[in-house]
Image (cartoon, rainbow, N blue to C red; front, side, top):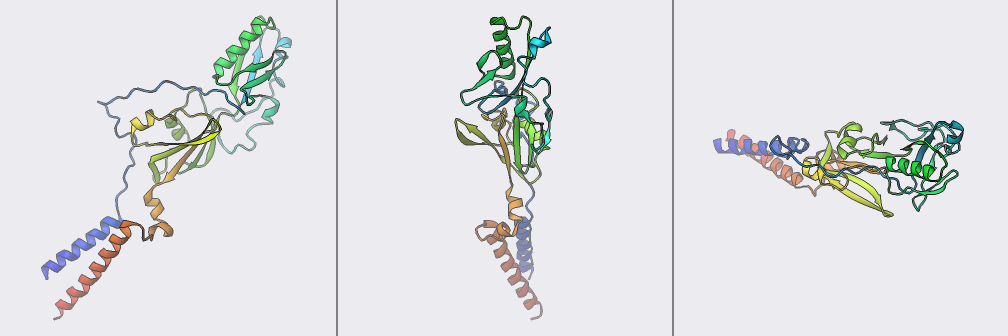
Length: 276
């Protein structure tokens, strides 16, 4: 009788283990320790590309001359750095206040004409415009500023759904997750996906946030405008639904079923022997 009770307890333990497994893979950067530092990759700045919108302002001592190069003056209104939320209503007709980068990476600048800006950073664009104005004797003492009007990335899944503006010239995926409000406890941290358009194709990159090495060495360590940050739910949350939780394809389903059958059988057998 004692052996049957032991078997019964083992079966009950098996059910508890298979149905109530503790959460795992929650901690970030598990391989980054005080004795194991890691070198950061080369900084990658946000660079202008097709369909970007640039806000370029020229200032000089003679503001009448400066106005020749400023589209619609200073009427631009944007969401501001760190903006989070729907893009609808984010700005007041940005097309009226910005320069559009065409498919060749060019913009049409007043008086000057075509300027190639594709692949340049914000500061490099400002420097190029300033140099051209000086070289062509259009402005003697120009100060040129440039910013991206549509430098946004998108979040979906277990990190929330939002449109977030990139707040600085070099912005990492770690900062992106933090600015989005962090991952939920049900996020699959080993498979953080970044979907990026490269050469007319959508490419999918996966980053393991439990490994600092995976994050740092990823080609998407630095976020670009237009990136989609998608975080899947972990298996525990998937299996909490009826569709997945009762799936016969899951090994834990069969383990739980067998444990339940054994437990039920041993219970009946133990009670039967008790009254014999």
